[in-house]
Amino acid sequence: MSIRTLDDLLAEGVSGRRVLVRADLNVPLDKQTGDINDHDSASAPQGGAPDGVRIADDGRIRAVLPTLSALTGAGAKVVVCSHLGRPKGSPDPAFSLRPVAGRLGELLGAPVHFATDTVGDSARSTVDALADGEVALLENLRFNAGETSKDEAERGGFADQLAAFGDAYVDDAFGAVHRKHASVYDVPARLPHFAGRLVLREVEVLSTLTGDPARPYVVVLGGSKVSDKLAVIEALLPTVDRLLIGGGMCFTFLKAQGHEVGSSLLEEDMVETCGNLIERSGGKILLPVDVVAADAFAPDAAHDTVPADGIPSKRVGLDIGPETVAGFAAALKGAKTIFWNGPMGVFEMPAFANGTRGVAEAIAKSGAFTVVGGGDSAAAVRALGLDESSFGHISTGGGASLEYLEGKTLPGIAALEK
Ligand code: 3PG
Ligand code: MG
Image 1: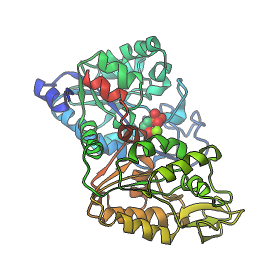
Image 2 (image 1 turned 120 degrees about the vertical axis):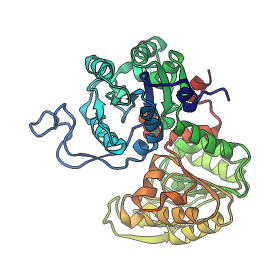
Image 3 (image 1 turned 30 degrees about the horizontal axis):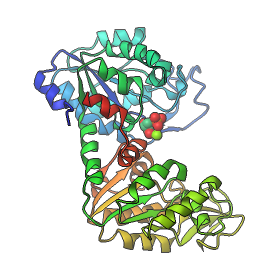
Image 4 (image 1 turned 90 degrees about the horizontal axis):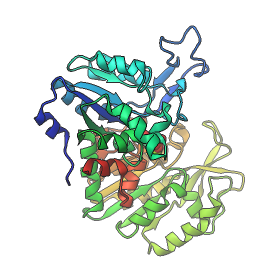
């Protein structure tokens, strides 16, 4: 691989140089009180950041600290940029990175200078005022249409403005490397470019899965939609020894097996595809044999465990059942490599968290090399209070890790290779 790394940049010396770091600080926010769009109210903090916003999971902020600390420690002027959520190309206070700047500063143990725009007056003056070893965070990249534009010229114009803030570029936004966006794909064409520590570690780990994983290699997939996972299932089937399927997507597979799924999540147009996958998998695909079915999609809904072939017509499946957890645990025991993406049920509601917890615990104690992929599964590990260190690697990328496993060219990685 011809990628230059952060260590190469540090070896050149960065003291007094401006280093533009693309991070993925797209963290889940809890909106605690009131209307978060009510940012003009007198109670809103200065600068228009929405009031009552709490960072629900700061894993992605912590994941980028090694790169940032290495740069500040070496005396660089560090300019961090990121997206948050999916605003539509213009400023939207609900997606401000301001709360992230606060948390980043706490974790770094040094103030983070926040620019209230991305490439405007505030960004220019904030970057100009940086002293050696200081950090600035620019406002959400996606407040600018050029960031995600499909038009090369429009993206390029925005990339020119961003690139003006750096003498070198470091990509540490693994979660966004599958996006052909200005800050990911076009900026590295304009500046000397380097892979940050997080990006390197993610690629190193995921490449062991696509290379020659120790066997048995077992993959656990969950999450709500089959259509999101279809390409990765296709890519994984020839490689894996077992593919365990839970989460909302399992109901489309159960339907393909001829079972009724009540009012559970169902992608009608994927039923036939799922049937073909089951058939072609030669027994590698393992599906739930029981599910927790509830009266409604609500934390306090009445619910019971029912056989997967006996879901009552008015009930909604919100978790895999205990017999399924035991079967999945048996398949995970003795595995040498495990990749897990997607929760097994609605883990945010305690009544429907047992499947995700049970499978996560089985993965953690398997003795295998374990990789947890994706925002939701990583958040589940932390939300359920599981010990993060009992997993080999917790990826910060959901879509990015899946596309990597699909064998796709990732624009952000390709741009670093040039
Ligand atoms: C993610 O959370 O998946 C990454 O931050 C990428 O965000 P996106 O899916 O909105 O491009
Ligand atoms: Mg995504």
